[in-house]
Length: 490
Ligand SMILES: Cc1cc2nc3c(=O)[nH]c(=O)nc-3n(C[C@H](O)[C@H](O)[C@H](O)COP(=O)(O)OP(=O)(O)OC[C@H]3O[C@@H](n4cnc5c(N)ncnc54)[C@H](O)[C@@H]3O)c2cc1C
Image 1 (cartoon, rainbow, N blue to C red):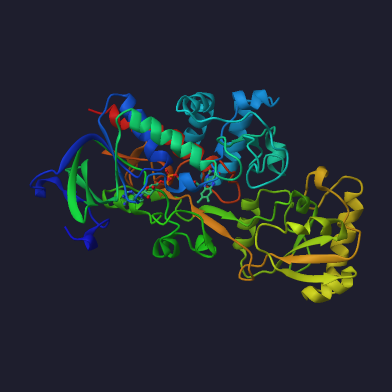
Image 2 (tube, helix red, strand yellow):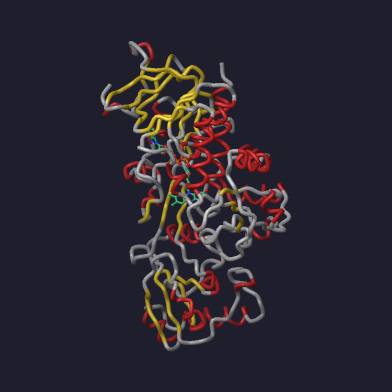
């Protein structure tokens, strides 16, 4: 086999003269999904080998903020004084997963959220029982708990009772993925899981319909590894693969900040497709433009080139990013008044340049080349209602409704292509059962093949509803199920 054949077709086991090694459960990818699969498979008594293309395991999970979406009254929520309810979490996640939600996965994820919390802490992951009350991309201190999505923002706020459900493993600042993966990897190694680094899976080996192994490049040599019980694909997303992005996810290709590790090239998805698996939801992903922190900017308004608002500005940054990249040719501005100038020592995270300033609204309107009078009308309406704690136009939460009536004014430029960050990652992947079994185009199970994390289409299904923590929550939880299913087979 040559490398150019990799990913495009699977290999017939009959053509394999001899196997270089064998195991029970063979896992492609040593990130969150893969290592959780490995731990569960090892606990079920299987011999487990993980192939990891990088020189260290961890993947995007280790690079991440580490927020994990869990609720229903976790010990951390309770210690911080929050009631939560699994049914409220379920209502929220169904809405957050959007029209392509997988109801069976959402249901199972919610029903077992408390068990998953216990399982993670059982692997040594710690959550400091402290609540961070402001809008932020992550807790800037060691606090574990925060609201990480649209729970308090319209229309989600009307559909379910809000609760903070983002849980960050204990560390100061935005690096919760590190303690998460350190603990998972330690646990996996203690259970005897073999992790081979610089080992790149190339394609699946099949015997008839059944996947029985993987061809991998290890030590510059193609090796055939037999998996007696199953292969779990957990190689992450495809945000680093330009060709796949342009083919499957053109809206994500408009992003200018690929959020992932260099091996987010979709190998596992392509290996699965070549083995007969069906990839779904491939156009969807996360689109983040971080207009907060500072959280005071939620009091600002965001307008487009018509000078009108189009969104409630208290949304999660992914919902705003999605709305903007839905119409990338527009112009977009975040408008603040002098009340906010004091927080400009920490300008919005999103890299936004200043688009204009004005002693009054007319001057700002001219600088931004908006239709004469448009911004003035928008702010007249906004301020009139905001002073009564109302926003009948876009339904922003009243806690952010401060009239913008203190000139001078300034505008940041959120227009794509003008410097604003649009960070993207993919949600599409192999169609799977909640057990991780990979399905073909007829939705029949491919024996011996499993997928989890961003190699599969899991819990996160749409940009406008995504909440931080849904991806690692999905990868760790459904990774576990995939590992257990593979280990339990045959
Ligand atoms: C900066 C950043 C912050 C984030 N913050 C959060 C957050 O707070 N909460 C959240 O839910 N999500 C977050 N995410 C997203 C989240 O981290 C990922 O979506 C999730 O961790 C993916 O898990 P995974 O196991 O599917 O993939 P990964 O963790 O990426 O693991 C995949 C592994 O497979 C390996 N691999 C790839 N191809 C091959 C191959 N051919 N052979 C062998 N190995 C291969 C890769 O090297 C990698 O180690 C963040 C992402 C980034 C980049």
